Length: 348
Image (tube, rainbow, N blue to C red; front, side, top):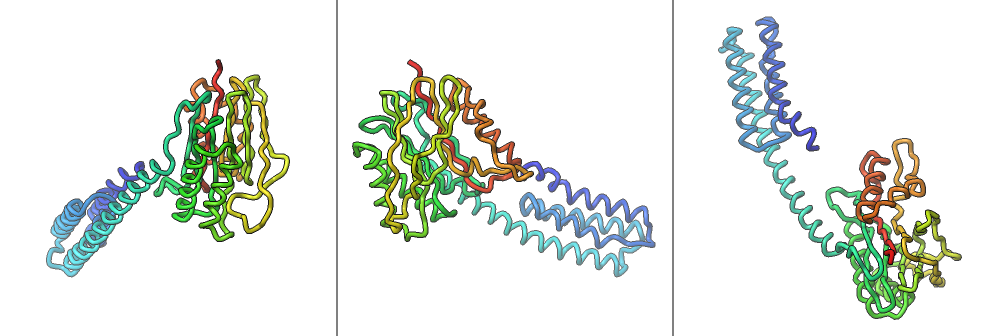
């Protein structure tokens, strides 16, 4: 929108210039005076009320000058152009006032959304225990800047605990559910002795609110100082492991489990599974908005082929490079929120 604003700002003057030139070249045989109302009509696209009034006055003066040039000052054509310009200018003033009111309301919404984002999705620590961390969040709803994806890092009693999740649905309800999950996780991650206890607390909090039709896919992880990583997968895309020696693998659970919030199904949850996670290793946790992002040819984002971007020394720079590559791949607004959390085991 910002690139188009200079062109829209010049449009009223450009149109009035073209119409005036055409009227002069055509002579009195063809009269274009009423078309000068196009100028104040376009004036309502950008700028304030004062600018719209000035453009309306300019169109009126230009109409009178052209009428005098064509000896039409007292003619019906001249009177009609004056009435048209005055009427369109009045309508443009009302449209400008309405547009400015909507812009103020949108600015207020964005301000509230930014505050909500800082509260709900707090910046993750650059260092947590023996890990270095970086996070990226791109909302599909540009006006809100926040959606149903969630993430958090907490240092627990036995290691660094992490959650990355995706709330089913959109809008404020998804944000409320994300807030509920994060609140329960932040409280439980400090107290519970293991990940199963943390997930049980989150599940309990969700089941008090959700109806059985809503759910949250999530990955819970705990990085232990002894060089292992414990994972719990609740129907979420598999984490991507990048070994210090260059090996790459998606870590799939042995048995798939349903998302959080579906206790009505009365099925067992996931079993924890451990993988080695030593010095120099990295794990990328992400939401489905990353791997389901499509380009204009409807091709999915090839995450596994882009992991070389994560070899930067600085995790934040590495993840930002991956985010920019994702946005370039789509080359359009994302259709779904995309959250990524990169954990890197520090070298001793």
